[in-house]
Image 1 (cartoon, rainbow, N blue to C red):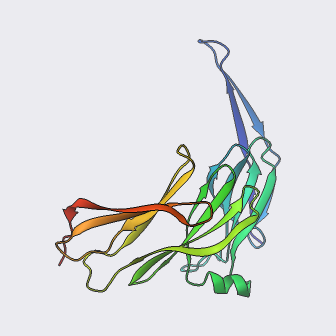
Image 2 (image 1 turned 135 degrees about the vertical axis):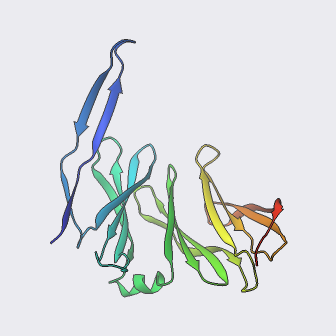
Image 3 (image 1 turned 45 degrees about the vertical axis):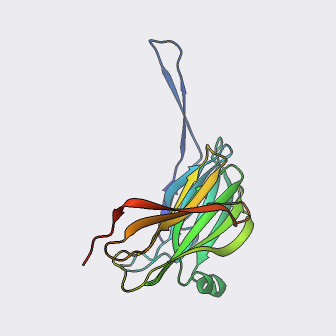
Length: 216
């Protein structure tokens, strides 16, 4: 039975004078996670004023195998006590396995009150983007929904590639878009759209870049 021990530390710095500095280190209680049940700690995602968000993957530990389970866990930013969690994918759950069969985890965006989880479905002719949202305690808000797609053809010298960008400082905005597919010699065009909380778009635009596609 494989287990992992996860220990968080909170570092509080205080400067007593221009010549001296003190450092206090506060450790949380030891937390033991079992791969079979909880998954391995994978990465810190981001934080807001109340919680720190982490990603856990339940791994097969076998070559060429993907995660069996992927979940997000929220910890209180001050005490580091677990405040919430949500299982995003569980291949042992028939419903989850069917829903996420062709999807790959793309990224998570953390805002003050809303958490966005993006998924991608890439094929030879399209790049599709899906999203689902949660409140900051990781309770579901909006169900998984396809919101964007870029098309490509076998004749394109440059395939379409999407992007997702977030800006916490400007109204917690999310910009979704991508480089459009293009043939050899044609200019590169970027499309972008501003995502709203209800997963519709507030505005969109296309911009041509002063570069052209090279290729065979």
